Length: 144
Image (tube, rainbow, N blue to C red; front, side, top):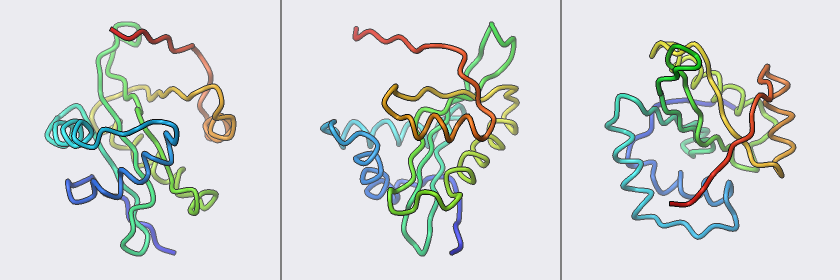
């Protein structure tokens, strides 16, 4: 199995939506809003969207945003989404995709990479900890 990791193009949108449905199975996705966000992100110097493709099928997606952090006194890469198709998990594809995102963040000048993960995603937590991530904060949200 040969995997290819590359920067997302708009033609990947339909396959990315299928992955996002796996990531958020209880959420009704607004495809028009998602297309707008991905289109903006593809054109942004501060966003990086990556796909993993196996045999011409998109099986992984990662979105990364570069932001300033006063606390870090530098740039930080924040992974917003990371998903590998459920039938392709445990094949090292998630690690490869995450490594590519980290390399892209380093290239942009980041000194730290971070992400958040919902409490119920215990397998994901183990994955992140096994590859060197540490828990350091809670994420708080409020609709406005």
